[in-house]
Length: 290
Ligand code: 13P
Image 1 (cartoon, helix red, strand yellow):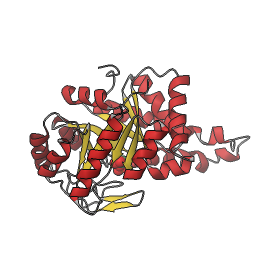
Image 2 (spheres, helix red, strand yellow):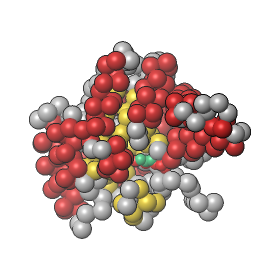
Image 3 (tube, helix red, strand yellow):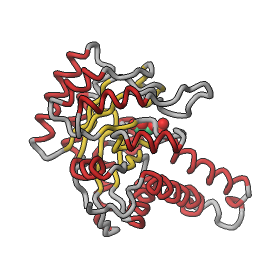
């Protein structure tokens, strides 16, 4: 069932587990993520960046794919369709397109005041339609769809100011980086996470850049208040590895192995398997209606 992300993340906050927010690129991605969620009876967030929306045609195409798959597959667990790292303009496009949740990423605006002002406007517009809102304080390192920033530690007072606007969940930089972590990465700052949590209370916190963070650090972050874990690169790597193995084994040259349904199947299965592993790791399995 398609829902906003508020209730599932509140339950995660109370129950000390996290919901995976998996980025989709196309039909194969959305289908595999949904199958994984249903098999494990896990709530799930499927999220789309502006780049992935362009690839698929538009936000509306992405929304229609996810909505129709949820309906036609008879998915019984809660599914939120979320905009990932949206600009102010993207948010309104997604509200129109039928997304149930949006992230307005104001962390790269010219000033914190602009982030604050625009987040307030987004909360008003989205909540009027029952759509949940994620905001961001402190840029997340790495490059994602052209949005680059230095990996910073979010200012706890700024997090509190944004939380007080009534956002439903908050992304805050705690040393995390999008994409593959460099060998000299210093790890997450649990000290900063604790300071933010102390000021934001029971507001669900979001960890971006979930790919490649050691399991012990993920677990600790969840115990300290992280309820939404963003995963993109991890599923891309799983898809690429399985597809490479198929081609390297020469299977595309065997009979009708070039048929896209055969060629894409190992990658599609790999996305589902990896999504299930991550859901088990985050503890969201069996929490479909908690
Ligand atoms: P990764 O690509 O590092 O998993 O990050 C995903 C993310 O944070 C999406 O917002």
